[in-house]
Length: 360
Ligand SMILES: NC(=O)C1=CN([C@@H]2O[C@H](COP(=O)(O)OP(=O)(O)OC[C@H]3O[C@@H](n4cnc5c(N)ncnc54)[C@H](OP(=O)(O)O)[C@@H]3O)[C@@H](O)[C@H]2O)C=CC1
Ligand SMILES: C[C@H]1O[C@H](OP(=O)(O)OP(=O)(O)OC[C@H]2O[C@@H](n3cnc4c(=O)[nH]c(N)nc43)[C@H](O)[C@@H]2O)[C@@H](O)[C@@H](O)C1=O
Image (cartoon, rainbow, N blue to C red; front, side, top):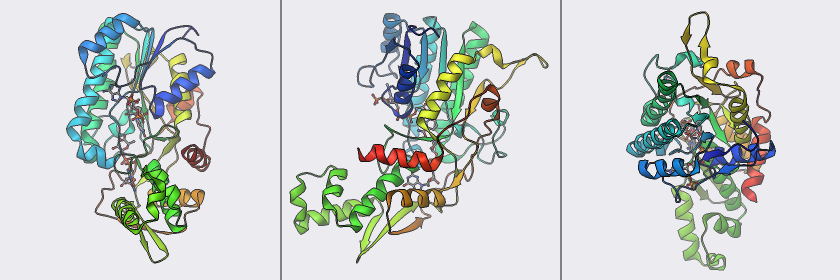
């Protein structure tokens, strides 16, 4: 990529898209085109076609998607499959029509089977059935990989796909019902700590409940107690109890979003679709690449790390009425490591950084 080449980052305000933009800027790239969801709805085929015809980007990072945690995926199943298929179909197809030099499609490690051998190699795609909670999202992501691969084979395009593990960092979604586990636990424990300190100012700021002075009245406090209760944060006497969804036993692998962005830019600069050609078998194999750390942690232990970082002293309880999802999904990142890239930020440091960001 030349430093002045026109680069479209779809989803530039999101967790990953914002980190990709920052990474490219730091590396000296200068020519960006961006649109918010409001300015360009990527599910609208005609609007996407007009956008590509007008802007003619040379490179595209497809980091826009309908994204959410386990409950959001399981609840809004139709939205997750429809929005994601439409967004990626439109962006991939228009990238072909308008001669984009290289496009990167972002998938997810939920493309791998529910009971996949661990750690998960790229080879294990489409070898067994998927985890039910995010099956619609995963099927859209698998379609994205196969769409890139098929356009490359039929039309000679250069579209590459990456499959990131669970990500976290600045500009994440902290919605307590729809977000992923790491931002959800940061926010819940931040609120839990404020509740054990009777810090109503912090609670109100966090819940966007204004005017702040009003909460000293007991009626307002009751409202706040019921909001916190809905999110699994309760006060019994002086003790605060905080709900963790599921059994706490599932294992997850977490990657700092800025490391993820660095890996994306690294691969965009270094990797082409033709690199997937296996000279031995004369086949195109594994057209996607895992992006992960190769290390995982149980949800229970993750909760402990966040608890210690934030300084929340209350008790954690596990609600097994909420889904666990897949019990383990650890990537095998050896293909990426073999190309010369490895992550830099470990989980403890990342949790500290994202909590600092959240406080600011
Ligand atoms: N977060 C994670 O843990 C993981 C994410 N991924 C994948 O990485 C990619 C980026 O995810 P992440 O950054 O977390 O997601 P975010 O939810 O943080 O950001 C998604 C972005 O997509 C944009 N967007 C959503 N729908 C539309 C639409 N219909 N039209 C235009 N823009 C739209 C949003 O725009 P706006 O800001 O304007 O609303 C937002 O900027 C996705 O493909 C996701 O599937 C994969 C594995 C894990
Ligand atoms: C990245 C990946 O993310 C999704 O899959 P997931 O990893 O299962 O998502 P998650 O982060 O929401 O949950 C991880 C684990 O954590 C537990 N858990 C505890 N307490 C909370 C909690 O408070 N919130 C959430 N969300 N989970 C919690 C939760 O029960 C589960 O066992 C995909 O749908 C799909 O989007 C995808 O690709």
